[in-house]
Amino acid sequence: MNLLFIAADLAAISILTFALYLRRHRRRDLVVSYLGMNVGVLAVATALSGSAAGLGLGLGLFGVLSIIRLRSTELAQHEVAYYFSALALGLIAGLGIEPFWLTASLMALVLAVMFVGDHPRLLPAHRHQTVILDRAIAGDRELYARLEEVLHGRVHSATVQQLDLVNDKTIVDVRYAYSPGSFTAAPSVPGSLADLTTAVPHTAGTIPAAEYIPGAGQAPAQAGAA
Image (cartoon, rainbow, N blue to C red; front, side, top):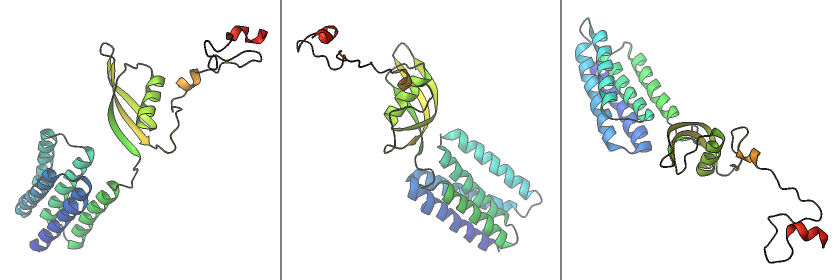
């Protein structure tokens, strides 16, 4: 029966790493990490499953490996999810939960969640970036307006990480929805810079400042007297 659980785990981790992770993210170093860690957890959990403290030792191993991995190299959140999924697959198969269909169902559930949760079509416009602006912007209205102009999207949240008034620089952590086709210049923050712009009244007998060309005739103030 152990061979059946081992075969199920090898099939599941192959789908997770090669069909899902490598195909979508293309990081070979993490593929090696996922495979080695999964098989290692499988081997240790299988060896300990026959003892009375097998379940406790398995959960302890899960926690220790999680702490070691999270403290070693900085990982993106989706890579952390793949890491824990690989851990869970190895632990489920190593403990050999009976009946076998329950083990297979749990492993299939992990794969299904990762397939849907990391699918490129799930919220494709929502993005997260750290942006460095070449100006020190302290006001939220002006900041949101500038970010939406640069990112061509609707800013959902912006957290200023560094406001450098000496070097005239702003570092912002931004979460936004990229929509270049429907994006308008009006920022999403109420009372934005667009609200502060007033139109110059164009009354009869006067020439607006935008239409006045020096040297092309009389000054705007004298146009009504002509």
